[in-house]
Length: 156
Image (cartoon, rainbow, N blue to C red):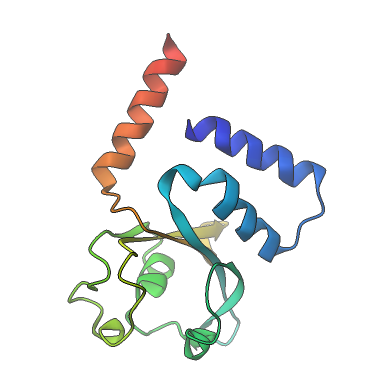
């Protein structure tokens, strides 16, 4: 399923002149609908060693205005994804894990269950990340199961 959705996204990107905000919208309303994704955002690493919001869909900018740019050294899912060059997967929302005390006062709606942050690397250096937020509690094991099912169906 995800392979066909990604192919659809790539085709859409190749045939349309999309802004980053429109890419976030397409991911939310098309590519990732099977995961109940409600928010998608893109952030970049600046030359000032900060993380700056670039684009989003489904994010209330007034609610998150204080997060438009912040130091890379803050302990956040976004900064962990970037500095550690790894996927950060939180499936305990609206409760934030103890390792992120800066977020304990920040809340999504009670429907939000999962946030995933994926680093974007260029020459093995983190330059940006993409984040998704879902109303579905998605465990990393479930995602691996989806991949396994897809791979099995592709082999048949």
